Length: 89
Length: 89
Picture 1 (tube, rainbow over the protein chains, first blue to last red):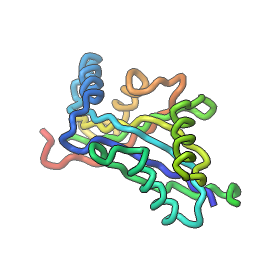
Picture 2 (cartoon, each protein chain N blue to C red):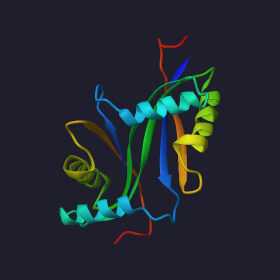
Picture 3 (cartoon, helix red, strand yellow):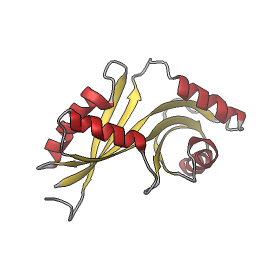
Picture 4 (cartoon, helix red, strand yellow):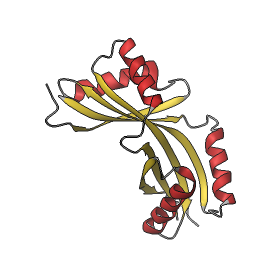
């Protein structure tokens, strides 16, 4: 079965986020004064083959630790969004 | 009231995603052969002041069109995650 998996990677609390700060300043200069904070992160959407949802999730968590995220600076969140029907093998 | 808002930005279907392709190749070389596709995108988490959830969502959608995303190449998805209790004014 193939699964669509979403990974969100963001800086841990306390880690400086210069991209987020730059975007915050840009939003203020566009007149969006109501924005109080911006944190920038990464999104990955993966199509992964596996026997079941749990196996796929734990495999993608392993990928996060090895490649998709930097566990020293970043937190990650893995969600299996759905099975891709008709595309399994 | 302040709200925590999540914005996901990803390339439209059909737009080439070289970063995603590079990550896919790297995952394969690490032995994760079961990964069939990777698409890379951006995550933003904003704290936004507003009168209610709908007003905040539509304001952030406007920010996406003007700054956070490139509507020609990218799709975006705005979710108001929660009100930040005790931090309103």
